[in-house]
Image 1: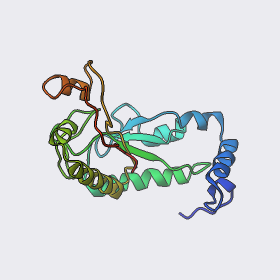
Image 2: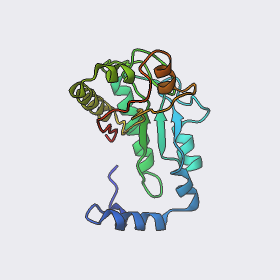
Image 3: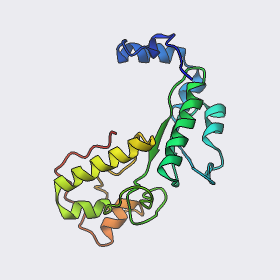
Length: 195
């Protein structure tokens, strides 16, 4: 369904500042609060791994940012993206949904930190890419990930950028502590995860 431009925030000819100011003035407190949450949703036979579906969170809590847990075929993932975007377009303000993901190009499955590659290309874990010491390889990895994510509607990569932690049970710090190089030498590159 095509939606007409009826408000200044919907007109791309206006500056970002003008569009944001207009949109914020039109939003209810509940709609603003909904933008502050980033909850997990699923795909296929597990659409609500945390108890509520995207549809429920959009209609009941005005949420619009979701981390996609689980995997499907590229077609299933693109269809899910298109479905939630249509639901978002039909809301009062038509604010698009942002779908994010934890790393999906791994050999391991550790929900919340990384998922098996599934339909995506398979690459070494972050620690492995760092250990190789090849900035061009990391750039190729980043570009490949960017293109694959965009093709299925994922717009935010929740990938670790740098981990200088010295302890704790978490993903990067724990892996580095258990056998990788000590996390005392940060990368000289400028990691970037904007898609």
